[in-house]
Amino acid sequence: MTQANRLQEIRRLLLEKRELKTKEIASHFGISFDTARRDVLRLTKTGQAIRIHGGIMAVDDDNVPSYLARQHILSPVKRDLAEIASHFVHDGQCDFIGPSTSLNLLCQRLAGRDLTVVTNSIDNVLALLPSRLPAVSFLGGKVEKNNRFTHSPQAMETLRQLRFNTAFIGMVKIGPDGAYLKDADDAAMIQLAISRAQRVVLVAEKYKFVSEITAPYQSAPLDRIDVVITDAPLDAETQKLFSPKTRLIHL
Image 1 (tube, rainbow, N blue to C red):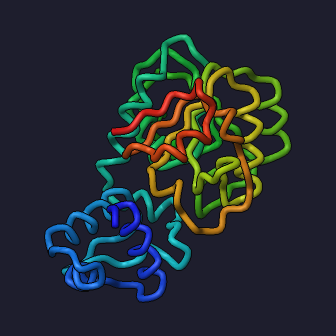
Image 2: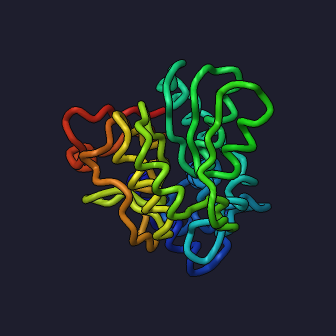
């Protein structure tokens, strides 16, 4: 069994048991303790589980922690993804950066850059406030407190009047026919931002391509995505889901 398959099974077990010891994982799969420990580290580094003494625990009932919970999960992988994404930011641009813990780390890297960032993420704005540049345009409206984004008809109308060089997006789940979010208002905002962008950059850990969680609202068909930045190589079948012109980048 590959590590990707084991991780998927471990996530399923976590939903049932809430906590797993590293030695339980080793016994369940018939693998060495060191191999099980590497699986544990992979899950915790990507924010899919929380490290506890001797093992891991589930982040919540449906394997999607709230934005605030995800912020407190130390993830070197997310920092590395944000570093790669930063290479697609160029001075003089007007870019949309959506709500996402990885994209919040991207915003933290943009101090002093001469561009305009449009966002409906409260935390992206906070990350961009300390420095004079980049310029920031915040799409206001009703605040979704758990995941810290805003939405409103006025914000949608503002998006319709803008044209972005690049839209940076994060997703909860990527399926064979598109990228999905859990919240309808979140999805509608991202979908419109994508439609106004010359280039779309998706930043998503590989586990989101095999996730079984419920995320019913499509924000982007896969053929609309120009760049995918993820933490591990995608298998051949998943790669075929994207346009041949899509750049697939992994850590």
